[in-house]
Length: 109
Image 1 (cartoon, rainbow, N blue to C red):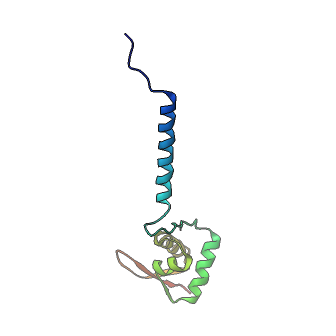
Image 2 (image 1 turned 135 degrees about the vertical axis):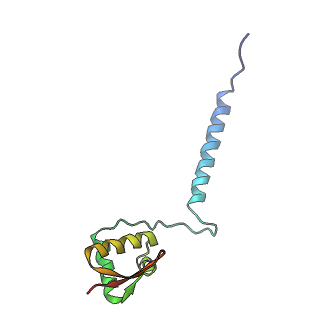
Image 3 (image 1 turned 90 degrees about the horizontal axis):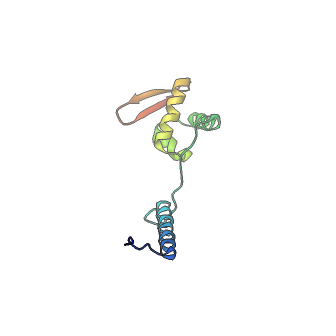
């Protein structure tokens, strides 16, 4: 007769509260590195303003690599590669040399 007894509501509430706190701690850990510094997002939408900044930088440089561009604009290297590829399609820069890892771009003037 009768089934298994159910846990009291207070126990269930305590468990839910504890799980919510653990999830918040996990999210806070993801937001910081091992050294305790906060991670900053370097994702950038490639818009006309960004392209104009890059073109101004190209006037100062003779050659540009994705690494040099990423350090100057504070973006990831993959974003810098996409920016340089877009500028190549527009004819602003041309590839000087390219291997499987990196490409060196020269201002097409």
